[in-house]
Length: 245
Image 1 (cartoon, rainbow, N blue to C red):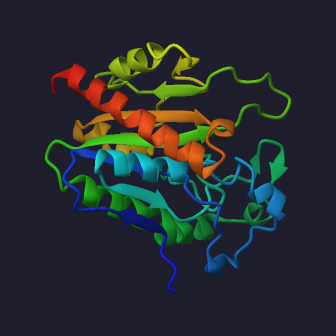
Image 2: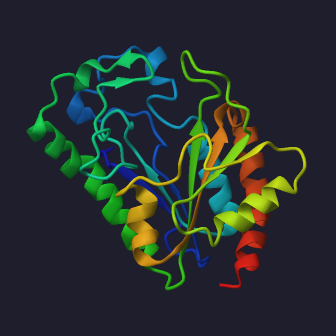
């Protein structure tokens, strides 16, 4: 089977929603030898991808009858949720782990990976986003319960935004009203990096958007991923209705 750097599923689904998953995979493409010099135990960590996010994204897209776009390369290969000029686009050290395959990556290698993986993913994502004139983008990510040497993160879920709070504000309140969740606004980190995926495909086009971060121990199994997709869909629909947009 020929390698491709992304998967688009349900492109023609009628919903105005579109689900994106920038860190869906921990795959190192064949052209890089299938490895960055890290053991499997490291590639299974959050440093390589967003654990559980792909399953949640697919389940959510099914529940919303919406298209979903998923990357098919590890964030350690090149990070699709970073702008092309971001210094963290190609990481050499991440949460205490040195990435051997990136240690000597020069400008030419960075450009090659942009052409092979990053740019095709974003071109495909934008093509599908443009199919609906009132597209709404929900980006699904996951976060580790605790970074090395840092305190545990208390949030179950975070709702992230940049300057556009039209959808994130009502979604935050809908989640908080559930009563059993610790919900963070722009937690466990801020919601905007210039040139990131939401900036590129939502903010620059005036599209409603929300980025959701789920703590990855809550979405470790297929059943958990499906349950969260089913849980988030009606909350997102209600939050969208709250905007009257």
